[in-house]
Length: 304
Image 1 (cartoon, rainbow, N blue to C red):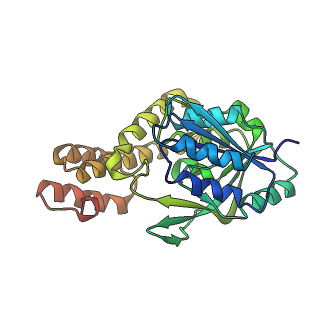
Image 2 (cartoon, rainbow, N blue to C red):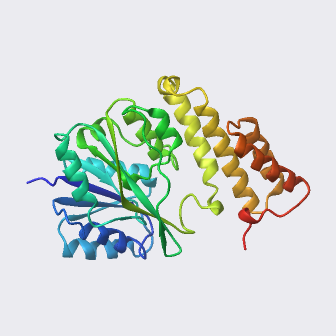
Image 3 (cartoon, rainbow, N blue to C red):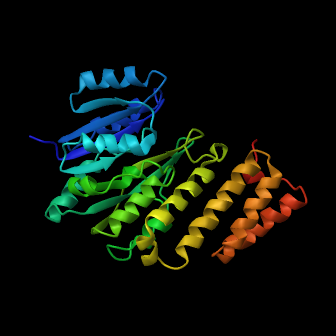
C-alpha cells in the first residue's frame, strides 16, 4: 500500500540538525507516511546520520545527488515520491506531533481534492516559541497573497498530481518556494488551515541571514520569474512587482550594512526608496539612508 503522505526534505551539510527534524516526522500520530531525504552533495557527516536513521525506520528513504541546490533536491524527491499528497520540510524545521493527522483530517473532509493546503506555524528563536500574526487568504486563487506572505515549505501540502505538473524552477533560489506557490495558486484551489502545526527555526545558518547576501540571489530569481511568467504577473496587483523589488533592494542594503559596505548600502537603500509602496517603511528607509550619510551606526544591522 502506498503511503498517504510523502514528506520531502532537502539536506546539505546538516549533520547536527537533520536528526531532530526527521524525528519530528517519526513522532507523528499519523503513521502512513514516507520521508524522502535528498542529500544535496553534503561534505560533512550528513550521509551517515541519514543512513543510520533509515536503517531503523524503513519509511525513511535516502537519496544522494551531486550538489545542485534545494530546488533540484526537492524535484528529485517529488520524482521518487509515492504518496497521494506531498509535504515538504526543510532540514532545520519541525512538525508538531499532530501535523500530518490534522492534514489528513482536513483532506478527508474535502474528499481528497486536487488542491494545495497550507497551515499556520510557530517561530522558534533562542529556545523560545512564539505565534506570529498570520494574514487570512482572500479567495482560493489569490496569487497576490503568496507574493506578499512568505510561506515556508513545511507549511505546504499538495496533491501529488499538482507536483507532476508544477515543479520548482531549478535556476531560482531563495524565492523558489514562493514562486512555485504563486504558480500553483493561479491554477488550483488553495485551502488555508489555521493550526500552528509547523515550527520554523531561526538561527545564524539560515539561508536568509544578513551575512548570506540572500537578497542578491532573491533579486536574480525574481527577475527570472518576471520574464518567464509574464502572464501570471499580468494577473497580480499593479503594486505587487514594486513591493517585491523594494523589499529585495532593502534586504540587500541591510546585508551590506551588516557587512560594513557603506557605499553600496546607500545605493540599494536609494533603489528601495524609489520602488517603495509602504509609507511606514519609507520613514524607516529615509532614517537608514540619513544614518549612512552621516556615518551613524544602525544597531539592528550591525554585528555585535
